Image (cartoon, rainbow, N blue to C red; front, side):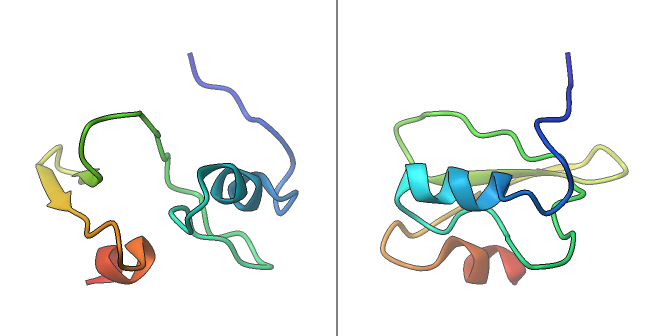
Length: 73
């Protein structure tokens, strides 16, 4: 089940980043999180990217670096 948690630019990503204690989700004054982001607890910090063609890529993330900079590559 998918549902919207709030209006555009209402601070959802900023709140989650604050609760996580790390800038993991993108946030801007304009809408930038139109991609579905699913957060799960796990033993290692990584991102699983699912592309439009359903190809899956696991991206390991350095916990001491900025995740957004690592994912932008």
